[in-house]
Length: 307
Ligand SMILES: *Cc1c(COP(=O)(O)O)cnc(C)c1O
Image 1: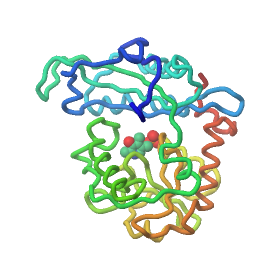
Image 2 (image 1 turned 90 degrees about the horizontal axis):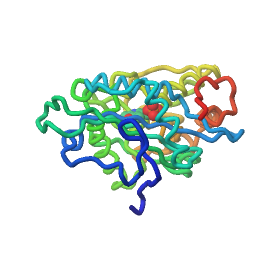
Image 3 (image 1 turned 90 degrees about the vertical axis):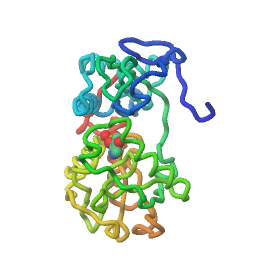
């Protein structure tokens, strides 16, 4: 467990259990076939010392939407799941961190049809720093175009965070790391830029911001926040189909996601992007984002749920 996360309590099937007792049977259906859904949520300790979950309602709504897409009936109300999310960090003596709700199919039937197997829910929380590293957040990461395509929308539906879909992301991520990069950027099956393995992508050209349209990408909550913040700052944002060479000639590129927050990309496929470090518009939006999540911008206080 050298790099493993650890803690004291996990919310499992309706209440808190000890961390080491949060185990499942080997016949757990999701373990075999990958049909489960999850969320990634962050809680920040703001400047005033209060802890707030960023976009709690949107995350829980998307968890239920992911379940609905996959015909998983969550045996709890949205409010019950929100309560579990609100209590998990304090139960682990944490005032900020990452929260992972997981909906999965328990054991029973073992064919592809899960039949009446129970739908189970867990909520975990742990301390997690910058997903792509502090240095990456400051100065940008190096990315490669993956040899793995993003699934076609009718092979893997794109609006849910479905466990098994992440095999595609893991293949791309490991390939990128083994090839000496920090992250993979994936093209869709028609060859257009889609997103990174767990992050949405933005490109700056001139004074405009571009991001791939929704069909092949996850409808990211951080993506939406950045679009809103940018527009409020008078920056024009357009959804646009982008080719890989449009990445190469971008002035700036950055990735957004709950885990990766706002991380600049300084190089793609050995082509330097812009000045080769975090660009000015990226910096502006990144600073604004961290101001919002840390409670320094009352304009967006509605996005925060205090513990
Ligand atoms: C979770 C995820 C994102 C980022 O979504 P957020 O809501 O901002 O966390 C982007 N792409 C993929 C594939 C993801 O799984």
